Image 1: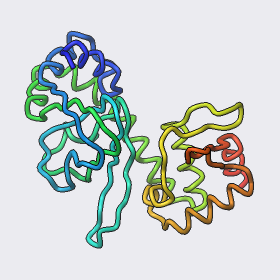
Image 2: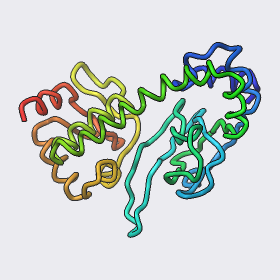
Image 3: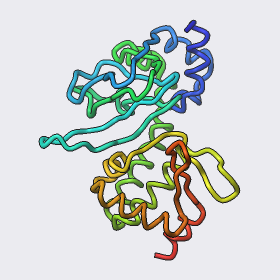
Image 4: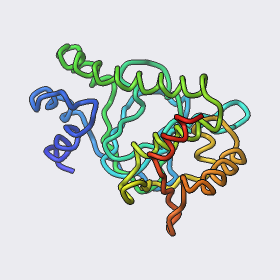
Length: 232
């Protein structure tokens, strides 16, 4: 990928959306492109945090493991996403594992060099903090879902969130996800069991709120699920 191509891609990344071409230029100058094969790791939880990554194409699973080895999926990331979100503004180690789900091209930016750019250009820092504030609000909303809602409600909210992140139009009333999620994946996103998710999806299928395509992708009646939440 040429420097111009990296610049065009980074301009689409939400974190940099408020930057001018001139402000983005020094960041493009320190960026590199790397390709990862499926099921390889970009980094492991607790590895030294020294780089931040932007997905040019492909998908990456971000997840944590506890001392018993139980997996908690933080997010499934796709084109234009960055990770880790706190990478530019903390020191220490990576807070989670980053596993590649399919062949993936990543734009890599070294943190030390990036911080030097911010020190020389404080207006760039201000613009980026605005965007990061939106991410913090999203994480707060997800925490609120876990604290204030039961598991059934959390699963409904998860399906709606997946529609907004991975959905494509199926018909006037339904959205089809463009990424496959197993029941274990869904369970690990909200900290419940695979069996609970399986029972809930069976219940939702009987209500015709979800179905699966022939290729195994979830098809979700998002407006009907919103009504279901409202009526609880």
